[in-house]
Length: 95
Image (tube, rainbow, N blue to C red):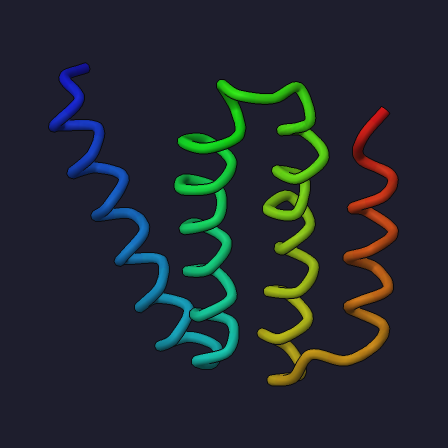
């Protein structure tokens, strides 16, 4: 797959997912998902993945965000139970 096609495909899915979440749930969920995608692509993939073996630790934050997105989609807020679940998964992920 040419890089340009992969970039267009990834950007299309990212933008579509943002607007889909905004339309079907709420703006908070859409922003959290957008921030997760940006963190995963920019911080984890481009910055950390090739430079440090600690990439799994810090990249794990992107893997914990579905908890926050799901919580905010249902409640429209971010509350302590969601943060606690985020932290449990974050600290559990690295071996």
